[in-house]
Image (cartoon, rainbow, N blue to C red):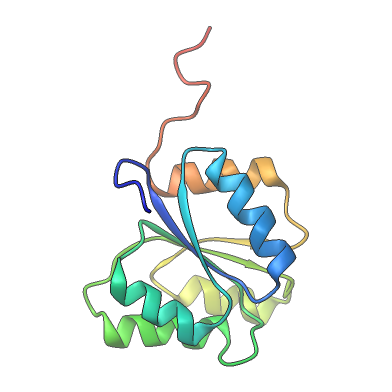
Length: 135
């Protein structure tokens, strides 16, 4: 069951091991997560409940991440949540595509630093840092 009080993250990642690490990293940081192993399932899950944030892999078997993002924009034109692209593709062409996508908040490459992912995800949804207010 999803907790409405926590920011909800849809993780679109075809590698199960990476998806588990992402889920653990984010759930221990105050996020509710759901995993879609491919674009088709991601679109179905997106239709059930709009996420506050998407973590999006680019290289997937049924459709690539850019195609998933385009399908979301087409099927859900009012969608306006940040997207963190998390991919092994570190080439300039993919980074340029990411910059041209209005929903892409940040482009992170694999292997990723869990702390950087936590910080980026918290910033993307406007969550205060867990250290905020400490002296």
